[in-house]
Image (tube, rainbow, N blue to C red):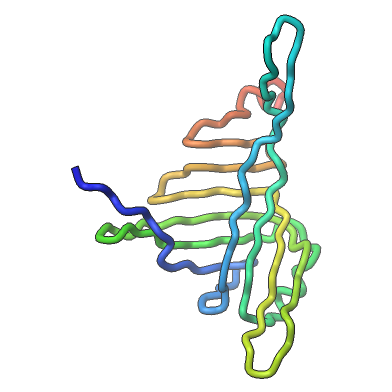
Length: 167
């Protein structure tokens, strides 16, 4: 059996509040999907175990080579839509589409140093309320904080909790 080479991001495009930033989006750092865990050791237990207390907050970072006035106007606007479309491909393999949908507030805009003859960038920090990851039209993750949805691999881990509280 031949070893498969790893899939790598070959290209991507960024859409912020519906506008394409093709050729102007340098990088995106997707949020960490991390559970908030706390140690619990009750009577009769020989060691602590970690209890799932929900998700950590989600933050996305975007670097643009563009001083778009539209972006500055988004500071503090809640539920700004972000879409990142990428192509991942293993060497010799077929390209796979990845679509990442996020919503959040632009919390920080950091301008780069200005210097003649150098590239000017802007670093954006979005605090997210929603994240969805699809690859090859298969939804692998969806986190909707406001609507209490946490789904990985097609399993909604919070469905029973929503039902229990009448949502």
